[in-house]
Image (cartoon, rainbow, N blue to C red; front, top):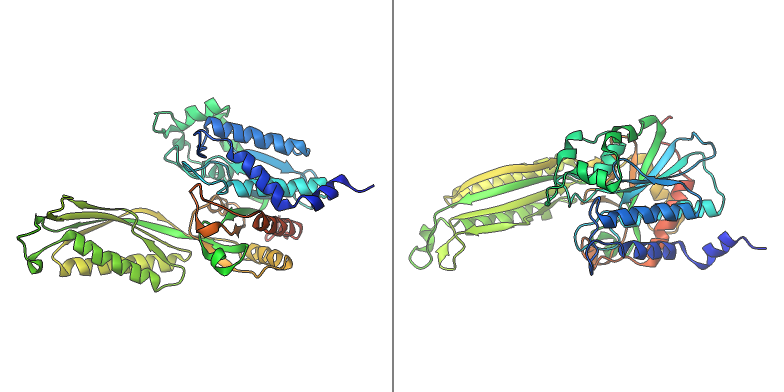
Length: 421
């Protein structure tokens, strides 16, 4: 008689299993007609309970911890074996897509489900974590779940409040968690062999390369600047062009310079995401302009040099036009490099699945950044249509999900610790 588990695997692909689970999770929302599942919301609770139930269906114990993560453990050959942690997040932005974060959680679940179906035990345990707070939408804090597991959670964050005045501490208690127990869930470095995250790319590179998956080398560091340019407002009809101190024209020249600088360097991106001109009247020369700049690179030296060049170029443009300039740094975060040995292991798994390997950086932040303080980390990107993310149009295919699952399972089965335990 054939093994029912193996028959199921042959008939229903791993990718199809992933897509079915993702559809089910997408129905768990706080906003009818849109996927909005914020940290510690009722929809988050339903999603967490659903995951606990799914793990239980194939005999893997799972529970919600003190910070609201769902944590499941698939034991290794010995009960006290160190762990390989696989995870991502189940919170979303408002009006989100189905795959950001959720894909990585479901991929981990389906991987251990497949191992359990085959009765396969490894020299290490596998821990699957569904983090509750990666997006940072509800509270003015982010990565709460992953930071708690690596022992980097700031207790002062418990006093942060959402737009309704509810504190993080109060929300955790209402969710059924014990804020006093957060410190106790921190993992010890000697117990964790590594961290892997499967995630949609959230960019167009894999699609442009016609590849289903890619190997992440680093998560970009980021600098954010707030720029103010001040000139002189004046009548649009009476001030000659040569005598104007037009703050908006100055900003326009600056924006072109920023784009030219970024386009000339591989792996560097620079974005002006918000701009405001005052007084904002159709017949008045703008006297003041404020705009933001977001600069990212997987290389901190490159990023910092680019920021210095941007400051220098904007200063020169403003000086040429008689405009005063103020540039303030509002955010600074260093790049997070994936572990070279884990990069190589994931790449080997990609090659064994017959896929051309492509290494690429991540322009977005992920829970992997927090785990890099605890253990070696790695990421696998999955192609998404048009590079669209944080949008209901976010889309992957079952075929690509299947490739990602085969790569993940291969990487797990061939995983070699990159440090002594």
